[in-house]
Length: 461
Image (cartoon, one colour):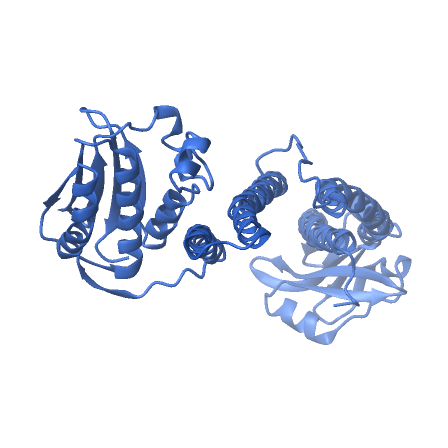
């Protein structure tokens, strides 16, 4: 959305809001805790003062009186004492120092009934707590004692505490916002680096990397994932460049031959036999171009993830027997023994694609196996998988090439391969088809020499 704030500002806002909420909760909790503690202490002090004053009251046969020293201790602008008889007459009353503290009949009546009560009055803007208690003589209530104390000093302390919170909060919010903005900028700096690098990458140079030394957190994993993505993209682009260049090179050779054969045929009038020979050469070149284009189309579909598979139950041993029957004449002509080593097994797959694999492998085996050699085609079940292999006793594949032969246009001996009609795509196509079925393909050297290409395919892709 266009109206959304930048991430840095949103992180700063969230950080400041969370900090403010935390400080408000902490401040409120601290204030309430201090206030309650001070109020409880104030109440205990008032009760002690009442107890001390009760000890100074003298209740004799001639009436009530109070020690003057006790009265003197409570004659200030923070405290007062009031001693009343049962009839409501004031024996001692120093409340005038605090203001007009009323005498409530309900409180006097409750005290004369033996109850002690604490009430609060607002007098001239000050909170005054008053404890009203009965005065006893021989277990008889003979009067009422009121001791009061102003809570002004305590409320001033709490007011200063609130003022301190009020002043500190905006300063804290400002510092939190500045700190949050700086922290967000520092945390997002790798993201900015990634953005800058991504904007500067050109198709002709994908070698740039972040190379940031970051901890294993979200940003660090993002940076490493970005570098890994760039490496994959560079590899894919490089592979595509090689593929395009190799495909153009492979197409250029047969097209050059076609052009030369046509030029030869048109250079001067030819006999019918010479024209037939020229057309046979052209037909061979066209067949090579057709095979190459078909292979390129298969690989292109596999690269885009759209290699079509028509899945159906397959009798793999029967399919191998059919292919051996078709290839037997070619094998006999080349003086090669073609044998089957199959175990009855069924799987679900694309019959045409699996036949394409076997055809490619058999063609390779026939090209690289000398007369008197042997080619074995077999299959057998292996749990939830099926093993399918083609093994020959030919020249074999060097260990250093056994993985690379699955790369497109890779040839161990490019000159000899081209003479034999290979373009270096057969094994690449086999690998694509095997992976499309959820399987694997690998090459090894059997004990007797030669090459063994083995596929492991799931019974059900």
